[in-house]
Length: 564
Image (cartoon, one colour):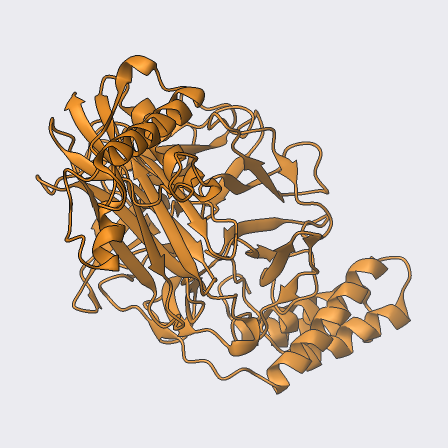
């Protein structure tokens, strides 16, 4: 039976059962277990129900009743299957060895997965079953031949069960039997940049303990880590836990997801979708078709909804243990031993059924560059994101970029500040269609140099007065932020008018308006030594005063860089 000789095992059990008078509960159980493990749910149901009628001594009624539920569920599912076409990723990805835990990077150009291969190293005895990371790149819509991810991640020990952050800047994974580990298996992380992978580091306590921690999945904003642990405080076996980062970026004490997800058995391989609310996982503690089935639970503001079995043919009589779903929810990758594969567990691709698709999201990548050099800006860059709907947007950020997911059909306002550069504010509207998986936005900041002028577009005054209107506050607070980011810069705030009124009046009005702006800046923490003000009246027109539009352009407030 262990060699999948189903017919031989079936004949043997039936022969033993016949010789025992058909009432041996142990043999009936073995036959029922054989049938359910092979997907013969109707046959298995007959024997499981029979066991309940012939003995109270041998049987675990709770276990038998659960298996009866599993049989009935399997019968219902296989009578009404969802039409799915599973596509094997082919020899560039799969082999005669096990391939599993596929993770697609957000740009969909890299597939990182675990391969179990026998290593043959001269003079070193290494057992079969060595787990290493492999990576495949996509080119012109096709996967190129896989390659080992290599050092420093791959070692002579096992590593796998990984997750990649939305920006592709961090890889979290499981490593076992390491000198710096807290338990047998811990969660590690490595930074990713244009040069490759950094030396991995143990993410430490409180996520890792003396117990077993594994199978991380990072949220879209990079601030919540879901993982599996057998630590005390769970519901039994292996449970799914989560840890969140605090304001300083430190992982906090993990929280068990509770009975809405976990059971007294095992829950493994969590995958949090890009929408941040659809949590997929595998369990052997709920009604299902095989030893492990895949489920999805929706996380809401009120808690976690009852998990839903993904159904047949995603789940089968075998063990389905991991799934990865693309941001738009249309397609997925699974690891499975299916007919037509390469002999063991392979990675397969399929289109998601409508009933179990996650809420789709659009990935938005925002990058900021130097306007002159077109290179990434080094140093500290602040990126703010607001929406017209006041939707909460949490982005995973680096010093020069950000990435976030959104379901909103709305307008976004991006604000950028960086030392040595002028601030920038830009609006961008997400189009209706979610067919496009991602949007890449590139913005450029202008370097500061002496003599540069900046028009303060949204600074307004009461008519013929130097009293600032309330709607000027947002623009002036951006100026406050700019001057704090560039505390060595000195500027002149200058006021300008059209040619209405006398020259003397216009000079006085423009000077007082400039002073009002300086007073606002000082009141909001800017040092007076950074600021000068001047009024030029109508002496420096930006346009003709012959038209109303021209006069409006001439009534303006300018910031000029005096020194850096």
